[in-house]
Length: 284
Image (cartoon, rainbow, N blue to C red):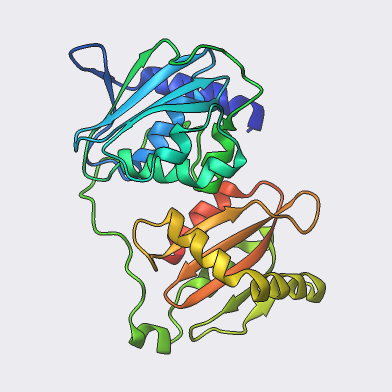
């Protein structure tokens, strides 16, 4: 399928999806059984071309109001019941340095086991710039979310607890799942290494790339761990993310944590969907 047609098919799919309208003009975009309500939030923002204010409200109580235009998050204009919102609220226009804090706000308002509603209105502070702000596609890539859904989602299932880090026995048996994740990525993962846990020291790919990865990890492991924790619901949680750094043009870096082990790898091209599928397979 031509990748250029995916947004069109995704839009057609969204138009065919039944919508539950709420009193006051809001609508339900994520049910309590949804596996990934943050994805629904980002998909709504990604469909917003003209400048609009989007107020996302969780049935748990928190709310987050964004100015959105041209598939970009321009600014945060209000946040209720969410911690550490001051940095984004204080920014006239969101920039790259705000993306981690913004993602935490998304995760706070789009909580599992609660409905998520959206109310649309005029932009909060005026202005309709579309060359500024944070692209929705960038935020989706960081969270390994596929924006263009062309088929109906799976039937709702009972939500289970988040994947727990492996036990000491599992780690001792080498069942961290990171090697399986690397294998599931296939040729898209051109080089990788694992540090920590039972698989510590395992590598694959061109020696020069592996050496660069090792050097990066040696220098930035603490910062990488902090980044994992920023994007995790709880410290130490299993997580996989696409990093912004690149070693070679057209490549990107993937980082994954499972228990005490970290995988760092080089991905060739746009492999967001493949990365998400491989990570889900590794956690089964």
